[in-house]
Length: 103
Image 1 (tube, rainbow, N blue to C red):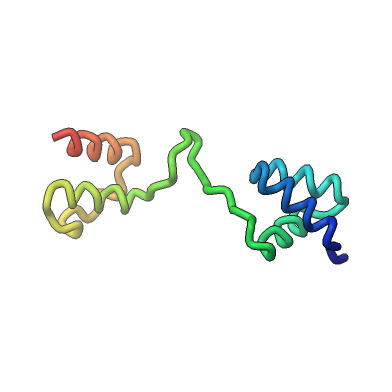
Image 2 (spheres, helix red, strand yellow):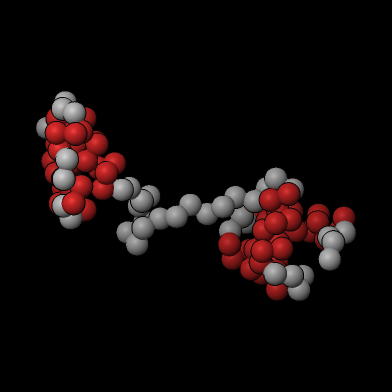
């Protein structure tokens, strides 16, 4: 099922006015298309922006390895000398990193 020019224009207008997943879902229902179809069309038109994943607390996800690397940088030592630290709880690593940044 192809999108005609009028439908494509409508799709672009609605999505660019409010580029959210909810808009995509509403458009899919209005146009009797699947969400994947709408996303595909918006992607081909070059306007679709994938939502960035955030944690439950609203932060961008950071791995424990990245936190340990930052801690090593803050201490001015090689990350290898902190091997095994990435097995500590993430909350403890974040607290250690925050404390080092304050210094």
